[in-house]
Length: 106
Image (cartoon, rainbow, N blue to C red; front, side):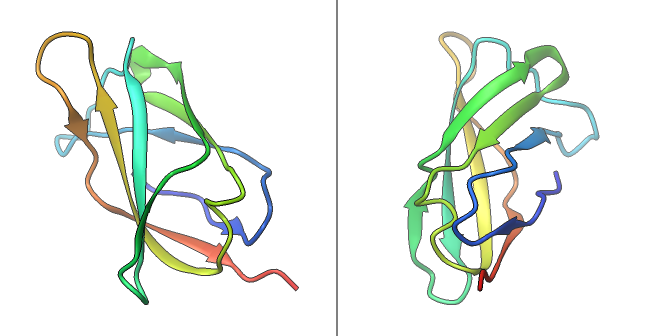
């Protein structure tokens, strides 16, 4: 799962992400509630994703991350992990940690 780079303090564009399992198949996200965490690689500080995470194609494992100001407040390199909670069955599911870059704004 690759994450697109963002720009500090820029709330657009959102990014569409496909949640992939280790075997290369998409994780089914139908009816899942998504959350996530961001860890600053320089400081180790961790925070919750503040923006909205919306399933756009559950069968294909696709969701959209609409950034909130707190997500892109600082430039740097971060680790991101997403969590999906389901009403029944084995829950939660977690992605592997992915690297994410937020470029500096001038």
